[in-house]
Length: 441
Image (tube, rainbow, N blue to C red; front, side, top):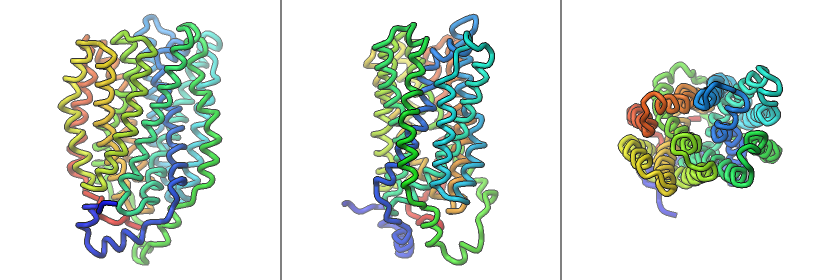
């Protein structure tokens, strides 16, 4: 194994402390975190991929665009409860442990997904249908708002000191895996079912499949060790006697929210590519779903690459370079896609956006939690991530749908990516570099 430059430049005391904080946790245990995280995001993003059909089922409107706008607005409702989930479940994870918090989020996502899968359409039960859907989205948002902090803390606390970036990058890679699987399921459905069948019941199948796999995630998470207790055993007397306060880390939280927003908008523009390809570019649904598969696979590969590179060269350069590249390249890429409107162009733009977002995002999702002390690590990460995603991820699909309708410019989603990427770059630049530090116990 090659030497790690970031550790080579660490002080001798830092190397010693870092090695002492490397609990020997099998990689299969880390896989349990990844599988559960992927399932939760699968259930959440599946809504985005089938927004066209869900809109017609639950949100009747006078025009197809009106129905779609209502559907993506309710997609945004799932983000409203994310900060609350981050606050409550993040605090629970820092007090009771990472494992019980992650079991709780699996339970919540099960309730939300079951509701979406089983709720009758508006034609069957009237106004109760959209009300139930909104409640289910709120529960799903609560779960995901509380998932990212504990699972990110677990991943970096499980990692050897010189591989925190690689281990932590599985947080984002698992989200890419969720998109990949959801896209495969969508392709299978759109190629085997008629449009009428998809509208009547086919869109419910992915949610039902997610429910079938949730018991596997619960079983795996029940077998996980507790990294909070292992980290506590390495704490010094002085650090144990002075509990950290979240309020003293306000600047870190604000910078983290800024860092998160760029990747969030890019991610949800990428998730929107299925709806965008169907409604704006007029591609067949199966081809549009194929773009989702390509984007998900791109996220898996480049997230892991970004995590590995951040271990070698530090978090800041790996966060910044791809984010600035996204700001420069997104609009020309979308203009080209709109001009040629070929499957190859759709896949190329999806890969480009997914790759740049994944590399930058993977480094960000490691850089943020490793800067917080152990006893506020989960809640600090949860709040920073949930607030950033709630403010910008939850509105992205509505904003880009509105932009296309208001401007008549089908490339306008890229302008939103460019603007938010530049804002995020400021936060990334100002975040401290944590790759060379031992985790604070």
